[in-house]
Image 1 (cartoon, rainbow, N blue to C red):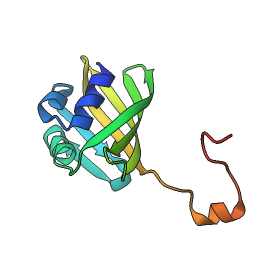
Image 2 (image 1 turned 90 degrees about the horizontal axis):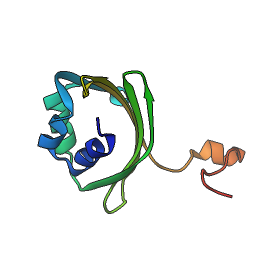
Image 3 (image 1 turned 60 degrees about the horizontal axis):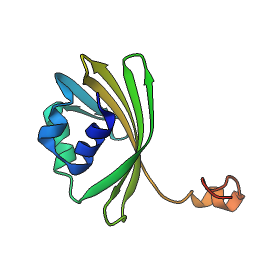
Image 4 (image 1 turned 90 degrees about the vertical axis):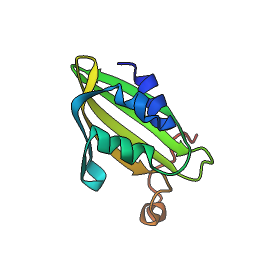
Length: 124
């Protein structure tokens, strides 16, 4: 499976292209909101979401029949930003199941800032 092309289609919200990457009986779980989708429901949730999107794959790992991606997803105007980790079980070259964990990007919570613990990723 071409992970870059899959994510390009997801970010472009191209339902017909995305559909090609899934087995017909596949499903998607969004664990942070406790939602389970069929492929068609996933396509609606992804492709009918408002806005224009962009992003970059930050990491890809493979473990047997599972492809794991970490992707930075954001609106083209950069007003919204998320990171998503996806665990894609691959069967016959297509996604059979996908478990995703979406997180909003933002500052550390005030209680940690007050404790002066941690440093910003990428800071010197």
